[in-house]
Image (cartoon, rainbow, N blue to C red; front, side, top):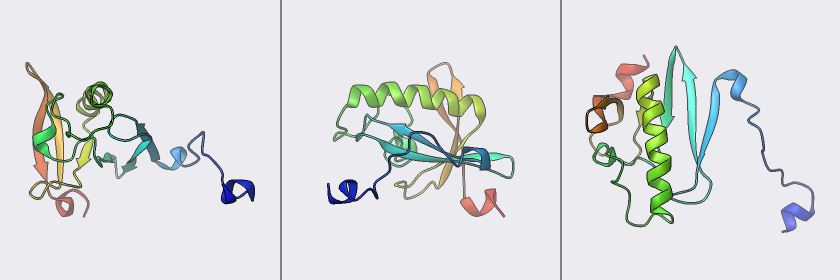
Length: 125
């Protein structure tokens, strides 16, 4: 309240950085207003997955974390995002995965699944 009352708190309603290749995706299933940075660089798009997709083991749509605040919303958001990621060959940066830094996904007969894993250093030299 003190920050808001002093006039120093500003809520962002539009992304001022989108024109320079930086966007923020907002998701509400895991926690309200979770933000996923989406960066376009050197002809590639990389998305920091935060808790929407913590590891490659969580790629199947129903595999969400047990402490999501709204797991049914997480499933809906995750399905829409993974479809977009597969369609556009996004690089998914996995914060919580101890073995896989980045992955790509693809459409299969069983839904969106893992395509490849990559090391960050091999993607952006």
